[in-house]
Structure formats: structure tokens, C-alpha cells
Length: 140
Image (cartoon, rainbow, N blue to C red):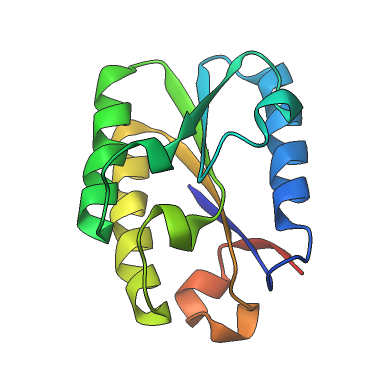
């Protein structure tokens, strides 16, 4: 399952994402991973959540990012949920047209390996396709 938190920069998407991940850890049976562009939110996450600072890895394209996600999924068979903050930055997506193909690949990964993705991105809901709009859980 893919869930989206969307809105302009500075609207509070990260706060919603942090609240969601910290409440999800209470009921999780498996592992939870939080991907971000830096380690700034390390102390806001509960200690059972694994924070990965994506900027520490040499990723420069959406395909490399999807490969990175596959690597994380392949090494953790107990992985249940992934939270992706600053999605456009960490996935190296340069324009809005690049969002949907990456989301479609993540959806395939989600279905095949039973990992849920919650994604925060700096786009207004009006900029999304109808397919992506159906995945929006918070629009700011």
C-alpha cells in the first residue's frame, strides 16, 4: 500500500509523517524504516524505528533510488513499513513527471514484499494524477 502526504514546502508534512510513524510503531509486528535527506529528526523518532540518511549514499537518479529501496527490502524480511520524507529530494526526482513512474515501482515492491510505504512530498494535490490523488491521506 502506498499513502501520500502532500502539500507545499513548510506546510507541516514532516510533522504528520513523524506522528504517523511514531504511532505506527506501537502496533507494528515487524520493522519500520524512515528515510530522510538528513538526520535532523533522529531524536523525534522512537528508538525502534531505523532512520536512514539517504544523502550519505551516492544516489543520483530515480532508478538508483528504487534499487536502494530494493536493497533495504531484500536485507530485512521483517520489514513492514517504510516512511519516506522529502521524497522528491531523496528519490532524485527533478520534475513532476518523474513522480508517477517511481510510485508505480514502489507499488509493485509493496505488493510483492508486503511493505507499506508512506510518502511525504512537496507537491500540491492538484499537481497529481487521478491515480496518485486516490493515495493521498493528508493534503496541506
